[in-house]
Length: 132
Image 1 (cartoon, rainbow, N blue to C red):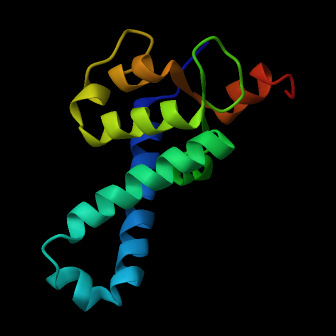
Image 2: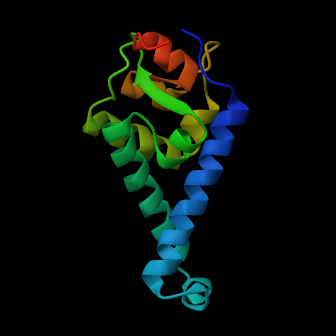
């Protein structure tokens, strides 16, 4: 099973981070409150972890991954979303930054190894699901 490129994964991460930042700005009541709040970065990180874990467990990818046509599948090629507890572990490890930077030749980082997952393109996902 071929995993997605790092460029697509980074683009998905940027989309997720931007969306999480917008949620926090809205929740805090505007850009001025967000910019003036020293803890706003932690709020964004929390929203990112929760949003990504929830979307991954429910739809097979975070908001950014779905928007950039990526999906998270089980390492055995099963196209069903990974269980919620593994999605949360995966996202917490991504938030720690180092696990995604340590990866195997197949492109799976420590976060994917811990969760038993792999990030694939939508085309690969469809072929795994028998829809392509």
